Image 1 (tube, rainbow, N blue to C red):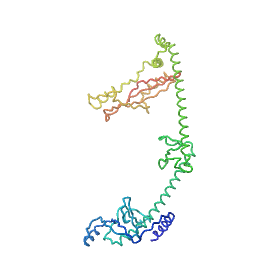
Image 2 (spheres, rainbow, N blue to C red; image 1 turned 30 degrees about the horizontal axis):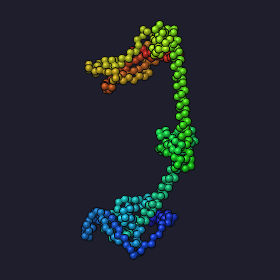
Image 3 (cartoon, rainbow, N blue to C red; image 1 turned 30 degrees about the vertical axis):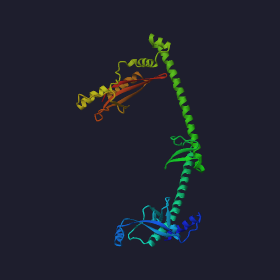
Amino acid sequence: MEHRGRYMDTATHNTASRPHPIHVVDAAKTLSVTVTYGLSEAGRKASLLSGGDGRARQQLSIQVPAARLHLVAVDPAGVARLKLQPRYEVSDSDRIVRHDAPPIYDVPPSIDDLYRDAARNHELERLFLAQRNSWRGQRREADRERRAEAAREFLSNPSHRAIVHRAPTPKRCFLQTATGRLMFDVDSDTGIAKDVPSEAHRRFRMDLQVRKQRNLNQRAEQLELHEQKKAAAKAWIDRNGTIDQKARSAAGVLALDEVVAAMTEYSFSSVADVPRYELDGATRLTHHLRETLGDSSAVVAPSDLQVTSMDATSASKDQWSVVSALQSKFPDATIKLREHRLTSRRHPAAPALTVFGVLVSRRDGPFTFRREFAAPGR
């Protein structure tokens, strides 16, 4: 009973600090109170032997004198009940535990038993409330410390940012921490945590401004590059274009794409005899599937074709021969052996077809011309 004495000291202190108004009650008066409890199987047998109804749930009405009204609870509907439910118990860890179910007896209780259990329940209820208030205070203090630590870490590191969805405002923001997402609000937070929303909003607005300026700079660079391409294309047409192209260029109606295509042909005119990589993957894969599956009706439509491309990690003798020939023609170009893996969405289990190409990229002023040439398989 040592732990109960300690709880009693805490409860006495808490209740003494919050005095309740005193109402004078006539001690001779009694109150009709409902009592509800349960019987175990042994209790139900005992009830039947003693002439009772043997039901698991027992309910009766008793007259409680005014001196014991502290053992009675009255609900909002005005029904008075003896304080047996919820019931409270002391756990093995020295804590008060609440159970919402009514008590269960192995023997039908007497009126004195009910009063005794209600008195004990009343005492433990006060201790439970004091214990719960203490735990809540501890949790609030731990939460304040956790928020303060997150605030200190955020404010001390200029690279940290608040969660952008929802966007931070001067009054509220969300931070992602190791223990989860935390909301900071100037109306509810205290101390250093109160400074987080305004700083998070300032950094958010600063990032928006930086992003806007970067986009404007990129746009300006793109426009400048486009103007350079237009000027270079016009100069090339003036030197190498047909009479029709020169006339359309002078009138400002010659499409840049047409000029780029002509410039690309001119740039690779010295290797016109080298076979180009054909974009006929659907046809190639159809023949491949018919051979490997033995199904002459297999068809791969262009919409079914899936192509996965990457730089080849090895080259055969014949492939390297093509790469070397192109390098000798274009020593200033970037040349890569490419591997293309062709598959069909309609035939996911069928073996893939791997084909190769040699991609040549040449830089000429503001333009980069690219062409892929065929390479033998392995």
